[in-house]
Length: 94
Image (cartoon, rainbow, N blue to C red; front, side, top):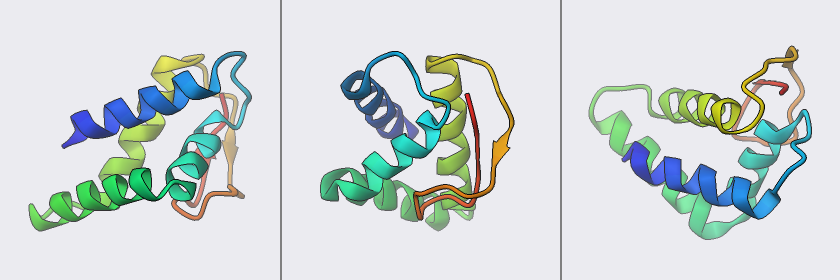
């Protein structure tokens, strides 16, 4: 399940390329919500986790945020409470 999300994040980051903007996490979520196939994968994994009694969207979003940080700068530069993506309420700037 999360392996699919890992692949999704890596593909988006590869498409974006460096240098990484401070809002790269928000941009990854925007890339997911704007692409029907990526969005379907995201929501399928969320539903599968929900079915296991886990908070699916919270688990997926935290995983994506952590992997974006690890795969890019590995530095947090503060929290942004006004993302453009509708999938998240806030994100860490990198």
